Length: 119
Image 1 (tube, rainbow, N blue to C red):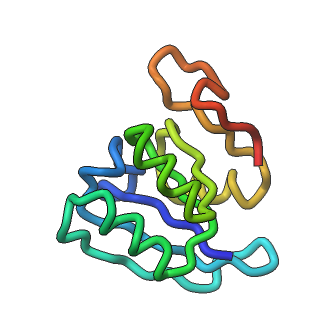
Image 2: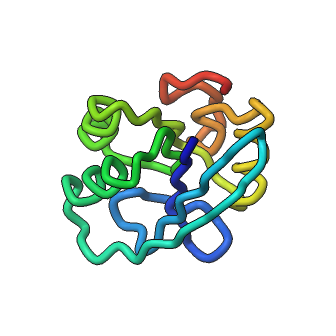
């Protein structure tokens, strides 16, 4: 399984469309076995969706993103867990453990506000 997380240093980037770096983690048996960083040159949403598809990403964990971009990702078979905030390692561990919920970082702190659910 592959999980992508747009980054700002060690934190999840607040907006997928404007992040400069994304890390793709390969996970096997509840353990990260590989990670690869990508510098995102283009801010075009189609380029970012194409990268996720080309890298065979299963899930994107991110801060905010535009609804149109989320729809394109979902149409490409990529699960989106959006509106989360925090350190990448912590979010990834919570995802692996099934404890990450979409909407945790949304203003007002309403878990599930983005239509997500626990993993």
